[in-house]
Length: 288
Image (tube, rainbow, N blue to C red; front, side, top):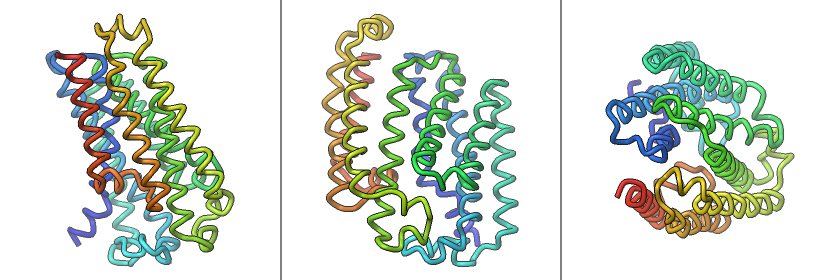
């Protein structure tokens, strides 16, 4: 039972909450007293809120997941955990995350509350509408980033907003393509919205989003105002790692029919290497 309850939390998915830490790094406040602790506290609160949303989504989807080739072994879909217990777990996780948010002020509480509301709306309605589903996922990443901004006392720049939104849309639609390819002709029976997408259309959209994300990050790295704020004109040196990472992800999506962001990240060494090198370059330029 303990193992099944832990699996419901999906701790492997917590890596998505690294977006909460991005403002800490790019605001150059990582070594200011209390800032790193506040960012980590915010990240943990979002981890619990994310787990609450995962459990709730599994409750809603348990019958459809029972006939899914990969999801049928989940604790709720297989019947190993009762729905009543899962509802209680969702409530506890959400309340604990909101209680943690109090330490970071009313603004952060509002953002975390909006995140929980968006995730609930996604599970109940939004995931059944074409492109609205991906936009809702992107909204979750934007709220994570905004939560990090508020936690460290920074501000949400237009560049941070744009790059986060584009990357999140890219990841969300890559996941949709993965589901369509995996389920084949049974995709629409599992979830109606999948029948309104097509792998060909998504391939085109993913290519556009990858190119747009690279262009946006490149413009950000070379923008005079950014160079003045960050104290370096060499952030463009990090662009190759972004290009390699996104192209590697596209290769995995097309070549191996993969699309779950966490699975791809945790399983592919070249992609992990490009991310580590990007982080090292960013730290060297901003703090070296």
